[in-house]
Length: 505
Ligand SMILES: Cc1cc2nc3c(=O)[nH]c(=O)nc-3n(C[C@H](O)[C@H](O)[C@H](O)COP(=O)(O)O)c2cc1C
Image (cartoon, rainbow, N blue to C red; front, top):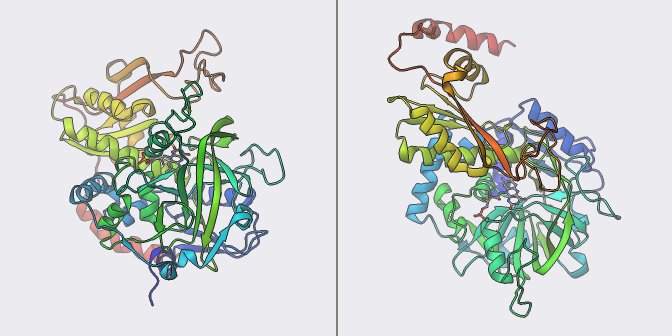
């Protein structure tokens, strides 16, 4: 039988020459993470299969999506150069249609149930969980070596709702972890409903009798669509994300019920970690390398108790990487921030052509916008709208004409050098809403700004930053020198010369 799901995805990669097998022994503590970072920096877009992780007989697979938009475009089956615009439209179309409902299979037909571990046996130390970066983690006792997992988390916000999201999970013991759930995410809302209290507000008036544990399953070893659904905040948290995945792939997701909690998971997953967040139980997490390339400080996070681990007999551990940019996390997040800005801009500026968030730029801190400019002033409108679309995330917006390839740094630099005049085209809005993962906007958060624009003089206002927009478009109605562009005929003539030269390498 042809493999489907994650195994089918790996087979496809192998057939296309896009699976890099690393057979040498390599340590999940720091080494695998460093290898992934090196591959990302070298722009190697292959999936990485570490066949021999030290101390484990479970192989580790990394870069399901990787650090470029290539596999995102493939997963959505859209052209790479129009991925942001087309993927957003596809998701909205599927959401409107309701997608394809998942189908439920019996436990015996679910590969993720081949091994069922409960009680003491549900031991996370069996898995080759990585310390992604050397300074990750609290590291205060035996297994607390700063190991973090970041697989898609599945919860059940309502009878028909199935939510997929990501929450970094630090292993604090064989059957426990501390998990970062951002305020405002779907799971934070679901958890607050179960607990009857604000999860990160110690002053809440808690009704401990009414508070219920909040169940979640972490799912390891899934196709790119699951990873992308988990990262897509545009998917309403209380709809069925699996129906959306079905709508995108054209076939229903095979689901199965969990063993110890009221949550359903993809039956073809490699490994499932089941568990609960008990009301008002917290654990220290971090420090931890965040997507922006800085270590975030240790903070109090909800504690997670593992109630079961189920898996295939010979599972593969799928790892989602976070480290210095470039990395998989900031790439996925950057892509969806771009989708968000594109959709929002399109509502007020139909002549927006493309939006690009480079994965290195803090997934939304810097946004590039391409417009087919028709009216004076449109670039400033685009700047302000892009800022408000991402709120605290957005810090810089660059707006370009339609002849600029905004994915190419040299094209962007060209526009900046030749179409931007700072006294005329720069928009600066000080003290706009920022966020505490911006190292320049931490102010009175209890931590000094790591890089101070103030050089230590004066105080930085709490959670604020300076917004800047740079208008890199040509002035309308002004005769400017003509740009040198490639000649189509000449290009056509050298195409075959070019490909033969490449093949002969
Ligand atoms: C790889 C990755 C890691 C993430 N880590 C976290 C995290 O640690 N905590 C969190 O709350 N959100 C994290 N996010 C963002 C959420 O998963 C994302 O916003 C999600 O769409 C929330 O969806 P929901 O509001 O439908 O639950 C991460 C995103 C990605 C792509």
